[in-house]
Each structure stands twice: as structure tokens, then as C-alpha cells.
Length: 94
Image (cartoon, rainbow, N blue to C red; front, side, top):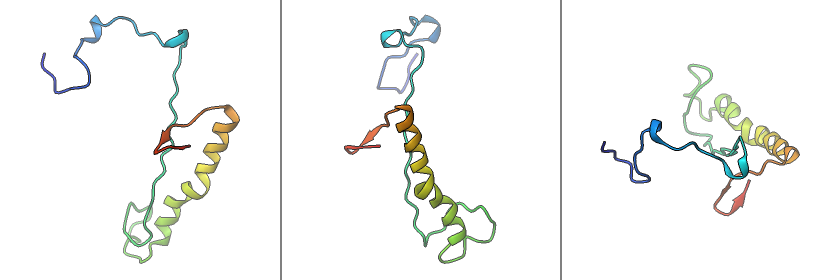
């Protein structure tokens, strides 16, 4: 069967050996915190119809920006408390 995947060879799931995590672990967790930047003066997804024409669109910017101002710090605090390391990007550890 031909595939367009260049990362690994195709193998039917029914013919693969059982997968085992290192050290016999039963669970793997990968935490990636998504940090986005929203421009105040550009329209984007709206929570309230008819408000995207506002300049600046404070209503919709506010709910998107909440995660960066408040939510991300809560997530990082929980990760620290639980000893869960975050992923790294561009040499900056999250």
C-alpha cells in the first residue's frame, strides 16, 4: 500500500508488535501550553454578534486576552505544584 508519509514506513495496525513505554510505564503525558498573540485592532472570533466592527474590539479582545493575563499563570502554577514539566520552544522553558 502506497502512502505519502515520509516519516515512517506503513504497517497495518493488526501486524504491529505491542507498544511498550520505557521503564514499563503505563501512561505518557506531554504538556504544551499554547500562547497566542491577538492584535487589538483586528477583527477575530466574536462572542457577541455585531461587535467585530468596533475599533478597538474591546469586548472580544478581552475574552481572548484573559487566558494570557490570568489563565496561563494558573496553568503554570498547577504544573509547578504537580511537578509536570512543560515543553520547550526556542530555548524558553514553559
